Length: 461
Image (cartoon, rainbow, N blue to C red; front, side, top):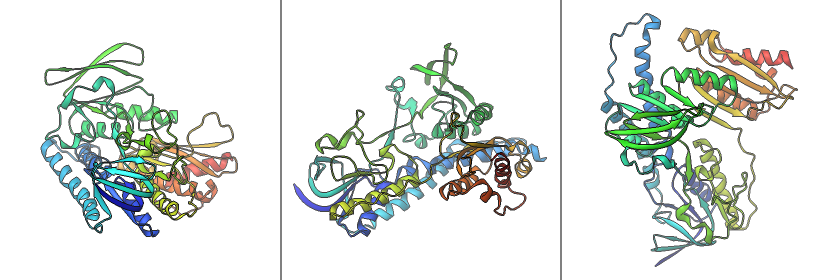
């Protein structure tokens, strides 16, 4: 068996792992990046980018169908499913290729292909062919889609984000289990491309929104484009002809059935920990097998091992994975050298959903029991620029403390990807509603809505 020695071993060459290896190396550590494949990062290969390509295609079809609002007559819109998916894969492969090219540029000895597992708290085995001794390690193995029990055993009838983008053509019908970010994005895009879509979710919210007014609006808006059922529970799924028959109960407990050519499991993701044999490390493991870790330093309790990215289950989005990877890599190098680790403050929470309208959740969560807050509300239905574009749906709810210092908010509407960033920066910088209100805003823009809601909050403070 080949024997190797490193200061830092990073397991997983996704967004967090690449950032960890780079940070450890920059800190002077001799570091190795271990990848079992297929690589290319979750975002580029099966996440952010292919889903946005599908959304863009759906948006183009929807814009053509609804151009009548502006006096533009388009008699017929034809969707070429195979062409949609060919472009998606071609662009997706370009994004993945750029990531893989970067890995190929790593010097010999810094990259190792294979499946790693811990032999003890200072040793890894890779494919039973290589033993790596390390002074610190970073777990950055990512996550995988969860396939709920009723869907297991259905073979190719069940899709996940790992398989969805490989299908040769759009299905005639699709049942989506889950109305969170992934589920509702893909569901709306598919519906706009002509697929008959049914969405089933046991919860009461759509797109991660928890503020009741916005959650209700989101359910109504998305429910107008597809068959949406909240408070529903899947009981059984069985093959039927060329598709699947789902048996479920609705909010009132009534038995219902849905038939679809394919089912998309979009009910969450689980951390890729099974192959690591964490029990050999002496780490403090929680009942579900997740190592206990500090959310600032990312150091796990019980061994010089850190965890970063989607695998830790905390804020599983790309910008957080990249930052966590950088923190974990630098701290792994510090542990290896006997230096103290850094404990930076977490970033302000920012989660976004790229539906139409877009949705976002920023900063402190919605809390109806906190009477110390000032809450501002804005409805996009009469916002100037939104009406010009025919996108005047949804609203914003933003909260601050009694001094006017902004704490967070939720948004559903046009240009939310930009509005949410502005609010995130204001929360992170501890700005007040007055300070944001006093910034220049160009006319006519959707950003004027942010000035309007700040004005309302100032009047209430």
